[in-house]
Amino acid sequence: MMFSLAASHAKGKLATDKIFGASAAAGKAVAQYGKENVVNATIGAILDDQERLICLPTVETVYRGIPMNEVINYAPIAGLPDFLEAAVDVCCGSHRPDAYIRAVATAGGSGVIHHAIWNYSEIGDTVLTADWYWGPYKVLCEDALRKLDTYALFDEQQAFNVAAFETKVKSLLSKQDSLLIIINTPAHNPTGYSLTDAEWDSVLNVCKDSAKVGSKRIVVLVDVAYMDYAGEKDACRSFLRKFGGLPQNILTVLAFSMSKGYTMYGQRTGAMIGVSSSQDVIREFEAINQYTSRATWSNINRGCMRLLATIHQDKLLSAQLEQEREVLYRMIRDRAEIFMAEASNVELKMLPYVAGFFLSVPAKNTDAVCDELHNDNIFAVPLAKGVRIAVCAVPALKIKGMAAKVKRAIDIVENG
Ligand SMILES: Cc1ncc(COP(=O)(O)O)c(C=O)c1O
Image (cartoon, rainbow, N blue to C red; front, side, top):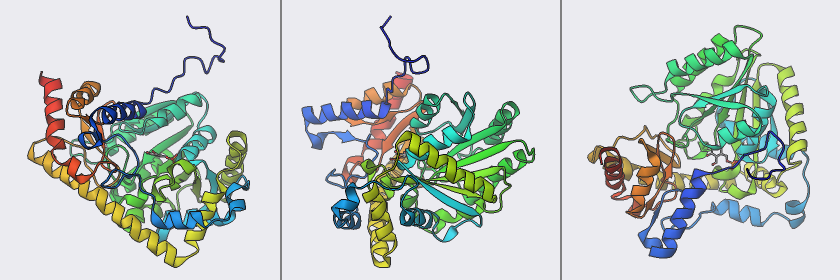
């Protein structure tokens, strides 16, 4: 037995991140065979067709223009007021729900998830998300001494599985009084799926039905990390309006992040946006989440908050940024389209991709499939139920031919 000084709740914890593991293997192959011979589909950031990390030009210009004392200084724990206002505006666009809305600054979208788990689920309780989910959800739950359970994301028609969702919501609420539900849409990681407005109606109907028992508390955390690359700005935000007029025992929390939408991945800036029909709930939301920020990381990146406020307050800069994003959106979409067309040609089954950084191919024994792909110098991330391919990071030229190789790797692993 290893000698350990860790407290009982911390003992044995080890973050074996599949994504970083796969990316390290790709790095090794690049060193051995040269960049041009390796397809690294593990990276969750936008790379251009020369495989260089892209910073949105407007973001870079504005950021470089921020005075040094603004970059280095502390910020209010709750966040700069201009930033909070901008975060709500850019997140909701023209579909701001009719409700009380307040924001609290967080260390990226991860910070939102952290606070939501801590403040809206009981210790020992179970948090709910879909069976295709971003791995850190589980780490965040378990580190906070909660469990994570899942429902099947897709039904037979590859649409949102409302029945599976309803069954899990009802069963968890028969055992616990509060339930935190994490829904990552639009442009879901890892599948690229976006819930339709009708699917959102079904989700909210299940929540409203469950909330009829007044002692039950439901918090719907909408992880919108990829919303800025989900398609037409207005169309992919229309579901947000549905969070107005919900019963007071349902709270919606939007996880706003500057990591992707502003290519500020490492700058750790985001906001949790609370939406509720109850002023009490929103006042409490601000108070308890600021408190948890103080207790977790204190204040966040002031320069990055100023960046958002500056761009938001300038119509020209905002329009320019949107144009630049549009170019990236198209670039990613073109890559995904090549993969989807080829997948269809070689009869490779994939999950329904609408938009976003990733697409996924269902498979069993995904570690073996990814190992097999290494023989073709292709590196992807093995998930529990499939292989994740980061179309955000692979140039179109390298996407060509990939679907057939994935198909072959799956055939070899599954049929020998
Ligand atoms: C699904 C999902 N949610 C949230 C995030 C949060 O990112 P950050 O904490 O950098 O804002 C990510 C980043 O990879 C993600 O993939």
